[in-house]
Image 1 (tube, rainbow, N blue to C red):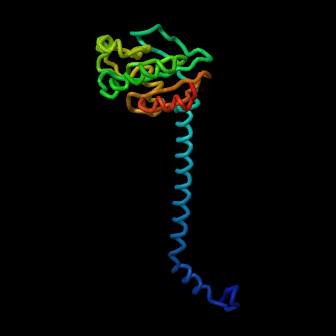
Image 2 (image 1 turned 135 degrees about the vertical axis):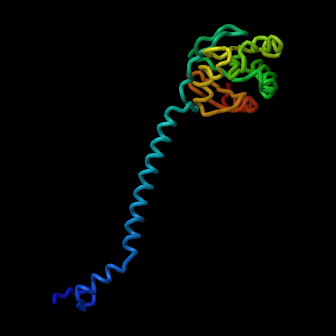
Image 3 (image 1 turned 60 degrees about the vertical axis):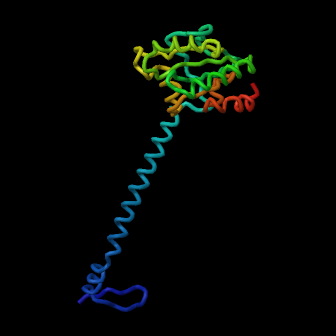
Length: 206
């Protein structure tokens, strides 16, 4: 009968004994499954990171070039078709159905008086019916001392228009009043809640 040698001890064992010992090592199967599972988890992690990186490339954030201005009409103030180089802008998104937006109007008007070199714009978005925007603005006319426009939608009741999609949703935001500050280089300098705008404008030294 052929025999195999155990390399460490020099003790010889029958081949049948060694085969029997191998058959009673369940940890080998567990080890195999463990490394298979580990490999799958690594692949999923890499795929997840790649998807997150791809999504982040399309996300609107501080430092991104400001998107275009596409609105249905300007209700108050001269139309602004584009952001001029060397000029700074505050773009606030609001809705007639939001009580917080109504309260933010006073603050935006106050800041527009304080920062005269900055152009302030209010864009109405996500309206149930855009035909209600003009009466709302006319009622608030003396309080809204800044440019006011209505988002470009496919219909009066289409909700998400160009500005809502390419500004608000592109920044992964879901609330109003939401403010974007566009610096004199044409890039987004700040994104945040309207109530924090005054502090941020001081930081930006406008």
